[in-house]
Image (tube, rainbow, N blue to C red):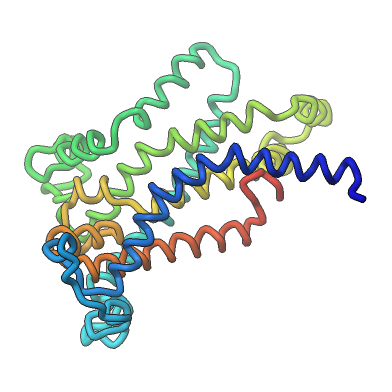
Length: 312
């Protein structure tokens, strides 16, 4: 005979699944179905012309390991010199540098905004302005600021004597990717600031009062008290930001178009499917992108020992 506790547990589980069923169904329709179709197309030679009539052919793993597949490590120019290899490197460079800078700056700004000073409410609102501006608008605005002939940035740097001639910030391979990173840091740092500030607002004040009474240096208090307490929330914020950075497309495409020197994995997928009409090959690249993001997320969660519930 089952105990009342186990019966209650089963009833709660049943009720939870009933309430979750509509959400799970919607997720399967809007996420699972497109993902499944993409994986299916990756094993075919489908194009935009043949999808509607289903006249494409099954090619197996040719889009993955064939002569022109995404895993063609035997390419004459070397895998990392192919467009797909460059897209992977560009994406990881962008994600690593941007997320690190945004996290550090976000914590610094959050600590400042957490202090009591006159006009704090106005400053908090002003900090969120870059985050509130749509990405396309921000990218286009900064593209004009960095324009090699008419941009304000070159004019200011020449006036200050920093540079002697105009620099093509978004066209020169030496500067293009890092210019995009700079713009992304400007736009997304407020997001990290807001989440970190929310974590700081939840910290108990008695820890800081005790540290003040003991005369502990503020820097030591930050590393010994503040950082460990906000670490779970900070790591969740980093995970979400890392996912966004790994699938970046819009800001790079608007500022540098289809340049091979800055193209991301998402940009590569878009180019192959839309511009080159290679739906099968583009779907294979999209599937690999999905697997890379999933693997990076699982690895990051394991290394940081943080789950989405905030436990460590």
